[in-house]
Structure formats: C-alpha cells, structure tokens
Length: 435
Image (cartoon, rainbow, N blue to C red; front, top):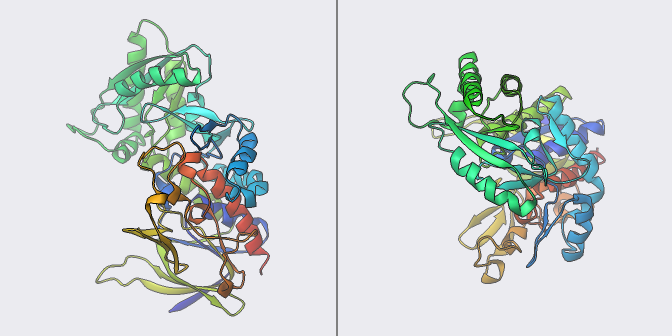
C-alpha cells in the first residue's frame, strides 16, 4: 500500500469540494482531492443558487438573496448560513473564478436572483447562471417573441409542451412574452427514433452536426412571417464547442439565443464540473479521480484516509492508497450526493461512522412538495463554528461542508450551491490553518 502526503485532503468532487480546495490553495497550502465522480454536481444545472425561497407555510421568494438570509436565519436560527454567511461572497467568487478559468463562464446579476426557463417548462430561480443560458432570463414586463426549439428524437425536451407551459407559468412572475415552438429534424445520426442528451451533444460537437443544426434553425426563422427576439434551445449544444455553436446560431438568426436550464441533464453538469477541475489543476491541486475513500481516522498530527483507486470488481481490487494530511475536509454531499446513507428508516454518515437516528412520522410531510420542505432533509453532520466536525477523536482536524451538513434544506430553499460555496470556503480556510 502506497502512502501519499498532503497539507490538506478534500474528500469529494462536487461544488463544495472544489470551493474548499480553492480556499486551501489561496492560503498557500497544497491540497489533494479524492473522489469517484462529481456527485450531484455532475447532473446539476451548472448554476449557483444562493437563496431563492424562505420555506414555510407561506414561502417567501427572495428577489435579493442577501436580504433573504437574515429572514431565513430568523426562522431557522440553526441554519448552516448562521455559521458561514460571512464567507458567502468569497466562496461564490472562488467558484465563479474557478469555472471561468476552466472555460465555463457564469453570469451574475448584481446580487439579485433571476428566473430562467428550464427543461420542464417552468422557471427556476438562480443567482448565477452559465453564460450559455444568460440571455434566456425572464425580465418581468418585457414583451418579446420567443422560439423554443426541440430536436426530433431527443425525448428529454419537448419544445411544444415547454412553450405552452412557459406561456402560462410566466404570468406568475410578471412575464409578458409570446412563446412559439419548432421541432427540427437532424439526419446526421441516421434513422434514430430516440437520442439521448449525451449523444446529441456529441453530435453537435462535430462540424457536421453544428452545421446541420444552424441551417435548420436558420431556415425555419427565414420562413417565418415575423422575426424572433430570442431562441431557446435544449441544454445539449455540445461538451466542448458549445460556446462557438451558440455564437453561430445568434449570428445566423440575428437574435439572442440561449440554452434552457438543465434538470438532471449530464451535459451541463459535466461541463461545469470539468471546468472546476481544470481550474484547480491549473492552480496546482492534485486530483485523484476515480478514487474512493473507504475510511477516515485520526493520526498523529493529522488525518489518515484509506483510498481505493481505479476499477474495482471481482477481478480488479483497485490500488490501495493511504493519504496522510494535517487536516481534511469532508465534502461528500447529502442524500443525493452519497455522503449520507439511508436504509429503511435508519440514516447515517458512513465515513464518520455516525448514526443520525431513525426517520419517524414527525420528519415527514405527506405532501411531497410541501412548502415547508421535508424535515428529514435537514439531517446531517453537526459542526462547530469553524466547520470542524463535532467529534473529539478528530482533534479539530476534520472539517465538513456542503450537502453533508445538518441544518438546511437546500431543495426547498434553492440554496444548494450557495451553502456549498460559503461552508466550503470557511472549512477550507480553517483546515489550512492546521498545517
């Protein structure tokens, strides 16, 4: 078994892990990240939601997330933001900088939240969105003609249904646009009835695919009796050349164009996480990809983590590696990311060997889309003010951040990336002090 040494170890590969690693690098320390994949960030929208809603019987929508945080803390005094809100600006800035360095630019709106059309035909609230979606935001009161484009065979996005839904849903948030739809047919992949988002993105990364898409949309627009102000497209314009393709569509059609926001789509999440990884590697971070931490334990003057790297099955046990660091940051995500495990009614955090108790009727709301959110989603790791895990055996050298933390319900609050950025930046900064 080989041994690797690092100033700080970050366990996880999602948004929180990347923000923590950036904070450690900014402190002048070296960092090693160990992760099998990007977790829930890998299928995210690539956006940063900081605080969109204060949940409750009468939820409060936050137009300004900075003004919304005190309201949230008054209602939920034990919320994660109570410990790390002061680091929010630096944490978000670190994420935006990393993504841009890796080739995925994000657009902010002067501290305000905006509404952006998504794949379901509704609108999502965010503070920062990928530049690919930036022109698609809804501006209350603005009258414009919007063309929603779908691709025949790409069953993940129904342009006609989405356009009809946008037309109705926008009324709740002040929209006054007119939505139209078109389904174009691409022939370059042969006689295929169904094409996944990933396959379509791969095809549109080729010169043939990009050219066919541009020509099809341009022909439709030229044959239409009135011009469009905006074209909305599914979030599949490629993994590599998506920005060039969007620019060409704008030029060919003479109007704005944008991808709608992804929901559970691997294309945008892949772009976002890979941009973060590139940004970190450019800054000197060591990334052990395709690796899994199987155990974390206190060691003399630090933390030790047992890892398995590479393919593992009955014939391939993987390479066993021990990473020794002066401190470590746990950023493994929550129920979705995989940091929190659940079976039947029992919930636990595997790497901390910590049982969180059982889920009872008091934790559940029969309304699956309750405006107050499901209480069990607030379960997670308890931490001190400096984000160190509340367990004396780690001697204050193990920190936690992001979805694995207790005291938040990011699904109802629309706060996942903001919590990840703020808590991770504080955890990373304090972990770097233990060197």
